[in-house]
Image 1 (cartoon, rainbow, N blue to C red):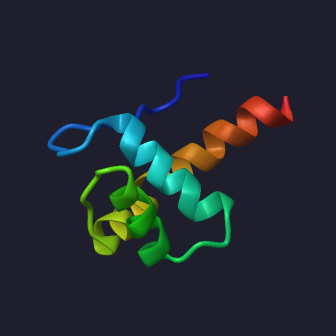
Image 2 (cartoon, rainbow, N blue to C red; image 1 turned 120 degrees about the vertical axis):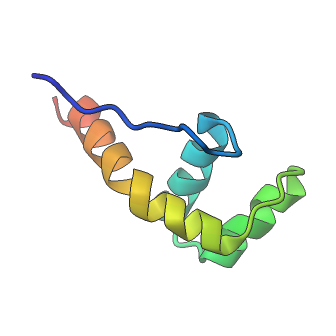
Length: 72
């Protein structure tokens, strides 16, 4: 099965930070602003609006990938 890969081109942050922010938002009952504050505590300055856009773009891919790994 050929799966489309997610492109991180033209992103300011590395894929690990994006994945962590999206994971925090979807895995735990946190608001976007709380995720923003958690990243800020780690020295990563990113707006809640950016996290929202990452969730829209990368969230479905991470969910499919995670479900595929766990469900099989």
